[in-house]
Image (tube, rainbow, N blue to C red; front, side, top):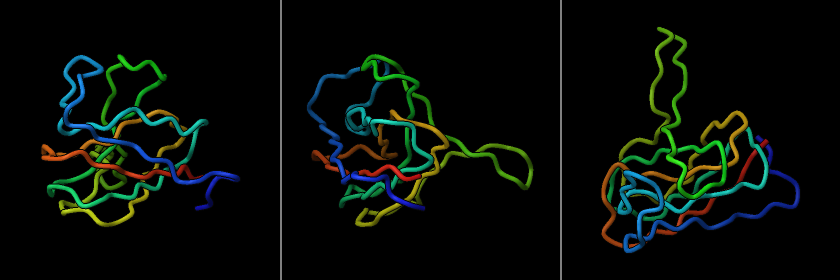
Length: 126
């Protein structure tokens, strides 16, 4: 897993006071839209201290703020079913690698409402 050339970590904010950007958005659980600037095979996500819960990604096909994102799943080899690609439940303080397979736009999603703004850091991988 290599980092992309000339790329640094970028911040992504989960702002619990902002106005919803797409239909059905839970602002206490969903970050701003992240643009990795090009399609990536994966993304490293630095998860700060949070109000517990699991972290997953909601992906978008474009950069339109009002586009409703969808949950990122992976195919399980054991039974050909799919499952949500997510971390285990915790209070944060770790880095996780999500497999993207050509995704550029996404939002970070927490399974639990956050009681304060959170800043995540992300970096695309090849």
